[in-house]
Length: 192
Length: 192
DNA sequence: CCAATAAGAAACAGTATGTATCTAATTCTC
DNA sequence: GAGAATTAGATACATACTGTTTCTTATTGG
Image 1 (tube, helix red, strand yellow):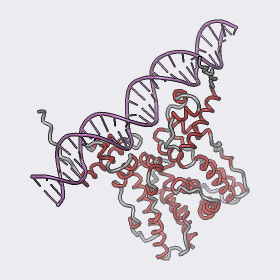
Image 2 (tube, protein in one colour; image 1 turned 180 degrees about the horizontal axis):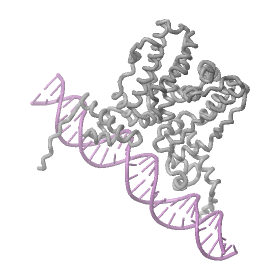
Image 3 (cartoon, each protein chain N blue to C red; image 1 turned 180 degrees about the vertical axis):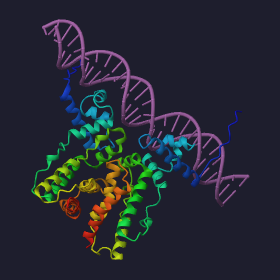
Image 4 (cartoon, each protein chain N blue to C red; image 1 turned 90 degrees about the horizontal axis):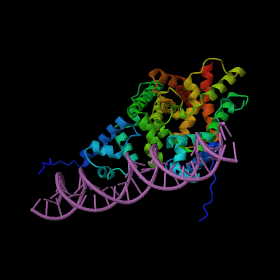
């Protein structure tokens, strides 16, 4: 009697996209701590089982939403700027901006549930840096000696220190300091 | 009739100590994910309200338990080994061992609840490193120029990268590599 | 057009947090 | 040492969330 509007049902990728969008919006508005599967379902105009049929847990849902809303981290996301220094700076900027999109609440939240997530949840993208270092060696900018992992990881580690530990988005000047004071010298020394 | 043993009641610091010990033991045995206030109460032979009277939330209880079971991080915990290199290595070992006591599960768990915790939850102890650098300057080992924060933080950031991101306890050799390949050269350059 | 699939609704079991209430053990004060 | 104040410990409650089950029905595909 009461006119129940006949509701259209989404399916397949259309539905999946809507679910991930709802999860992302929910994350943005309430942060990781306040994130509930139920709220996502409501926001998407559906119910929890629909979500649980696709992602087995809350943590996996968050991870999927974050992944769907970040650009891919392929090693060639960083253009060749012509110098080691320029490439490193570009890479650090790229990471910083990427992190800015996700935000500390979600990042820390995910870190806290690493127990419940597949190991590869936090892509570290060392490939991007090795690519940059290889480019520099090919240019003849640095030697061709093997650069130890610690040196390769250093710039990313220092950026992460700012972002996660100090809760501070480094400015371009601060990124430049990381590159000039630590990264470039260390790489030059190592690849000698 | 049934002989209810008259139970002694602990109070004050004695009780508090027992609660923190129980929380610590619980963390060690089930990790952060499985940690519940109820289990702590049972382990301590008491009930939840006793815990909530002292710590307003689960997260604060965990933090208190960790703090109570770690040695203080005073800047002079690192003895003067006579050289910048030696001091840095000693500091990195000290931190690594400290982290080993807490473990990744708890560390990540706490990081994930930073939203619910006082900002100062994760003490970063940069004082320890500035002390070491000052000592080296006083020895005449390095110049007296101001060392920028990024350089000071670098060794700790790299260690953290290993521990938290790579889930790997670095060996003494790896710590030595951090010191020799990155920390010492960067500090020497900066303090020139 | 009919069978297979899967969306969406509703309700349930289980478990957790944090609170309120009560009693009795312990300590403090005079 | 008696009585008052404090607070441990027990129990039960309100609330919220996760993940599952069951059922109906819209949609798709052969």
